[in-house]
Amino acid sequence: MSPILEPFTLGDLTLKNRVVMAPLTRSRSSDEGIPPDFAVDYYAQRANAGLIISEATNISPQAVGYALTPGIWTDAQVEGWKPVTAAVHANEGRIFLQLWHTGRISHPDVQPNGQSPVAPSALKPEGMAFTKSGMKPHETPRALETDEIPGIVEDYRKAAENAKRAGFDGVEIHSANNYLLEQFVRDSTNKRTDQYGGSIENRLRFPLAVVKAVTEVWGGKRVGIRLSPATTEPGKTPLDSDPKGTFGAYIDALNAFDLLYVHTIEGVTQQTRDVPDEVDFGQIRERFQGAYIGNNQYTLELAEKDLAEGRADLFSFGRPYIANPDLVERLRIGAPLAEAPKAYWYGGGANGYSDWPGMNGPVAFRR
Image (tube, rainbow, N blue to C red; front, side):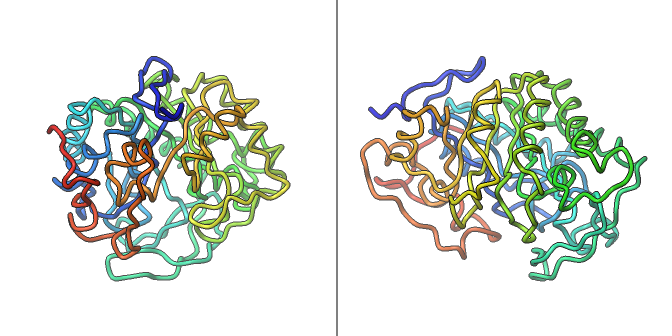
């Protein structure tokens, strides 16, 4: 038995293994941000993971950046998530909800009343936005007013409370992939001159206020955070001018909240595990006082190597979980992995989502 597939204790949670199902945006929710009925099957089939991290979930209407993504700000959304968490638990799995605000990586077509997306500064990202009428170029966002920021912190708090109502085991704060929180952290996207911009301390002020609000709801040992110091996607965003200094300070500040884990994207998602010299994931691992989840293009062999070298405690797999609901069993016996064509990744119904078979036919699960 691979040590990756043996049980692991994460805080007060006993996990089946060290395999984490990474958050995967699949764009199957309704216009109202309610997960579909077949999301119950999708997540329950994959409860073989030690921990599931849900697809990124919007904390408010303003947070939305992509069409057909789920939310957690309304009662209807909470009710839509309840059967998902119940099914994962019925199959002896654990599931955290990822809390998401996309910031400038959005488009007026997916914003309330067609308003402009918000960001720390009015800097237009490169790339395209996914809307119900197709891909459209990103537009220049509106810089948030200083007095608006505490309201977004409260949106995170309410979303964390709703995640608890929906039956999740904890939450992951999405502070990666150049979405709103990381837009504040990086000096390449934060050009503010108020108390939320300039120095590292100021740029961390809003993200840390979010962490404080969320941990006040859940306690630190049921909260994780996702970081991506090396990624330039989406929006082809420049790195921070001093990633080691900025993210070192971020980790040191996060330690005060006794978080359960840090979940890091090692490289650029979907592109490469190459890391520029100015980024140091070893520093994050060494300085963070909780568990470390490694992510990006992991194989079982790479995970075993990194575990043996003390580089990480758990390992998250994203794309392999799309077409392999029985991923853990395939890893256990060394079976080949199915590949999901990109046409099935985003949008559509149950086809290419919850109807992937296991090695021996449909994956059995309890509802």
